[in-house]
Image (cartoon, rainbow, N blue to C red; front, side, top):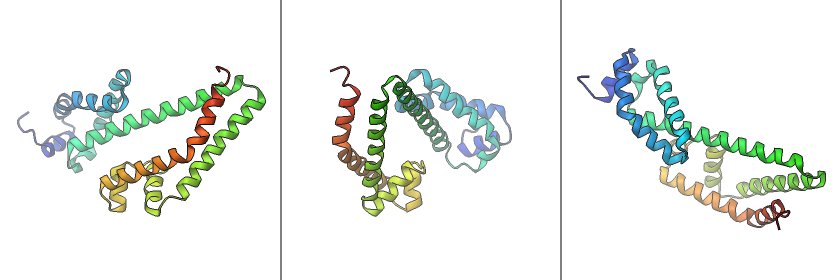
Length: 193
């Protein structure tokens, strides 16, 4: 390849040049894998996610001539894929927790379900009582699934300010749940004590 500027490579890829794709793959594959590994800490999932990233690059190649930064584009896809993987794991974990309930006595299941619903109410109340900007930042991040950078752009704030609001919101929630979480954990492990 004679020219290595991002714009040139992306233009060639957008025109269907397979050698431009190979160049991007060779240049970024190891970096994308390291980045994903830093999020997931799961070596088994890293290869699959990196493959998804480069598959998306190829599938969306006709749109790439509009991309300004190849680095940002690849690492945004990688971050989103890694976070999607974490969300799927969380959902799977939640499902496994609920199937655990199948073996419990009916009264224990009702009590555990009540505790979980109570925690959800406490979290919602805590969010409602947050200062307006913190509440908005938190809802955009958690309910609309926007990245901190996307929240910052939408609200015209610095990313650092958004990071701080998210951190404060999570601390508020942890503090609001501290008593019930202790009781919840005690309940879950009461058969072991």
